[in-house]
Length: 359
Image 1 (cartoon, one colour):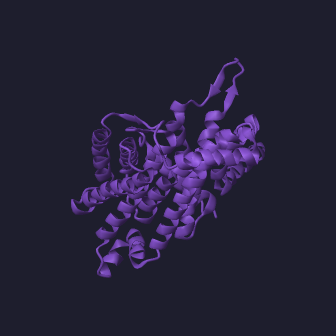
Image 2 (cartoon, one colour; image 1 turned 135 degrees about the vertical axis):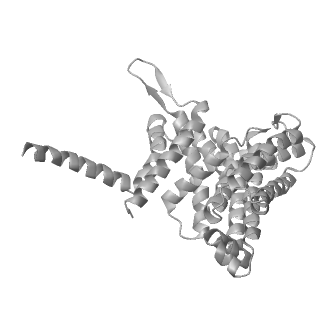
Image 3 (cartoon, one colour; image 1 turned 45 degrees about the horizontal axis):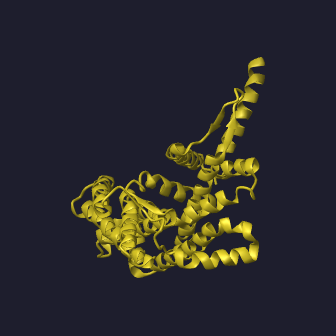
């Protein structure tokens, strides 16, 4: 009798834990929790600069999320080339800017550079029959040397160089000061970045959404779902794999050029571990939005990247005072580890829910 009575609380506790893990909101809370804690700890207004900076950074990286969505979700083609094409776009933009070219001209050139090496990865995988992961690692490794050749050194500062934001900076600051007061000027740079980059990201998203509705776009989508069916219809699925990987890395190269101009420098190691950030954006976005169409899926990748960057900024802002008096906080050097753990936890929770048949 005593054994039965003691087993009930254990069973109830286990059942409660299982229901919690099965809940759709659990992965979302894992991502949102650092943001909530940071808001309570520092206050929304006092840390406005942190949040605006995180949103601006998220938008600069948003096309990376869309690019990862294309390869991993649409094509089922794991691609690590983006670790090389992102700094490639930044390197091309930095060299062109220091040479006196128009900042706007750097964007299509960086896009084409990323597209070229994305196509090379896909050709190696499809024509030479090398696994996509190995092919992308080969190209990304080669891009380290290529990026160094392009830049001439490991880092190029752009602090006193004209960027896509420069022509609008003074006028926008004056507008912010007139409308919201002198204190708001410190937010002007991030707000301007959000506006300009937001327009670029939306245009790219809409163009890709439109493309997926064309005959070639639908064939590309079908290739990821069932390439045997595409072959049976008289189409070569390898052609559409090359096309999709090219588009993906084109977006990543463009994102690299934008990020270099926002941060004020280009560095050969900018893309290190970027694939994890892209995966985090896709997973977080899909967990929150649950997209059923391509337009919703690309939107979820963009929103996922923004939320992910806000979560990282919040985690870096948190400080925990231990009973011993020491302060525990996440350092900038811990960001990659925090990202890896975040993706691992959300993936595990998502798979747990699928295995348990949760809605």
